Structure formats: C-alpha cells, structure tokens
Length: 114
Image 1 (cartoon, rainbow, N blue to C red):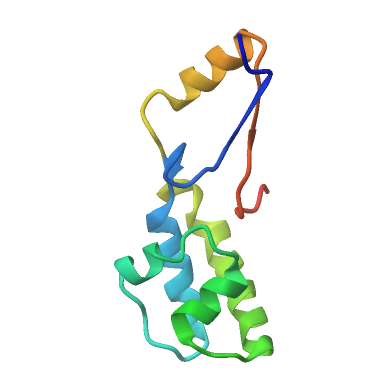
Image 2: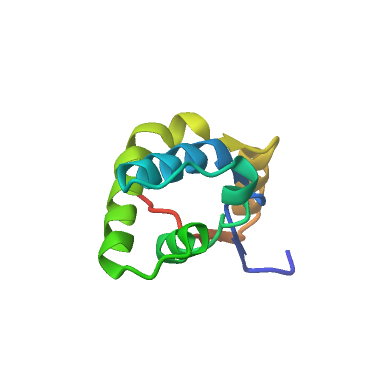
C-alpha cells in the first residue's frame, strides 16, 4: 500500500449528520430568542466551528450569547446526533479494508468525539 495513513473529514465525506445539526442549531437559536433557520442556511455552515456558525447565522457579535449558543447546541446534539447521522454506503467496510492492509486512518472534524 502506498499510503501509511489517511485522514478523512466526517460530514459529506464519511457520512451526513445534516439532520442532527439542523435540529441542534435551531434548538439553540430558539433558546436564545432567534428565529429558526432553513436547512439550506444551516447546511452552508456545516464544517464551521460553533462560534463561526453562530455568527454566520445571526450576524451577531455577542460573545456571551455565542457561548450560550454552543452550550445549547451541545445539549441538543447529545440527544439527537447519533440517531440523525447516516454513514455513507460501504464506509465501515472501506475503513476496515484500509486498516487490514496496514493503513492508519483518522477523522479530522469539528465534531465532539464523546
């Protein structure tokens, strides 16, 4: 095998957690008194940090509110993310095959690993 290690992004590479992210973002926005955003608006922020997602969706610059947004997002994500995330077809098998052939694999993501 020519490569000793491969790193993957998660969203839109290995799987899709759009539904869980939308639920979590909108939960956090509503908790802070903002209106919900569309799936398309939120999809454009996937891959950004929660801080950057907050600023992109609200246009705000309130650091304290951004911290609360992150807190509320994580709160909801703990409830909904696993059930609302889908791995793409053959991802498990492909990663297993790479490891079998001696290639180390890793995921680089802004997601929380717990």
